[in-house]
Amino acid sequence: MMATIKVHGSPYSTATMRVTATLCEKQLEFELLYINVRNGDHKKEPFLSHNPFGQVPAFEDGDLKLFESRAITQYINHEYADKGTKLTISESKKMAIMWMWSEVESLHFDQAASKLVWELGIKPLFGAPLDPKIVEENEAKLDSILSVYEKRLSESKYLGGECFTLVDLHHLPSLHYLMKSQIKKLFESRPYVSAWVADITARPAWAKVIAMIPN
Image 1 (spheres, one colour):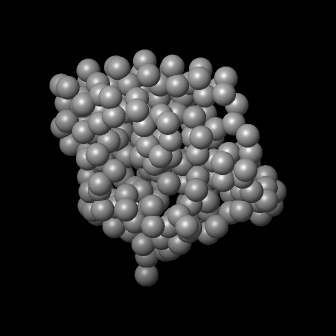
Image 2 (cartoon, rainbow, N blue to C red):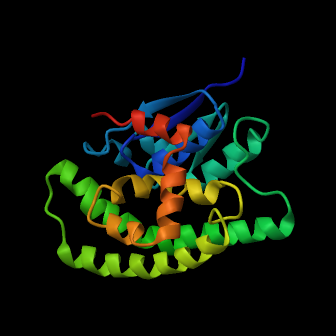
Image 3 (cartoon, rainbow, N blue to C red):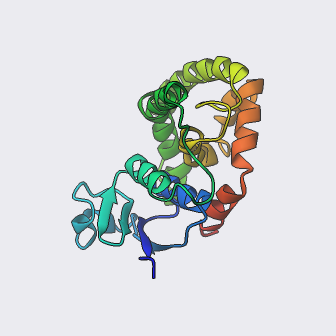
């Protein structure tokens, strides 16, 4: 029997959602082991034995243990290449462009988006007050980044190329929170970005990830 895939994380966590979205795109069965981040379970044992940095998610596939969500998604796509959706591009030059935009997601988009998600998406769940200065500063950064995205998406159906890849998938968790906040105007005011968001958020695999979030 195939070893059970286990994801130690929170269904509210954007990093956990990146991993579960990839597993759903690959049509793989897995077990989501809930880590109560609100209680600080990610900062103590036994979780620290899975990720010494104390951040969700952690991942197990048989005897393989991984942390860092983007490393996990790459492993899943490579190890289970024959399953579900192909999430990378094979041809070397197109692949280089895809990985370049993957770097843009982690080094540019996520730097602003993650702070906005925390302030506008996660803090309200805890009843914590938001910091208007952080929101204003990162809204301006995201606005500039999305202008670059608008140009890219006017030339390419998806960020990484002409097909849906990990590059697009990695954006989905932050989009889930941002499109329910005041920030959605930055996406909706750009026709190509808006069409891209509508396309990728409508994927059946993403609906399965959303269904894991408790009401």
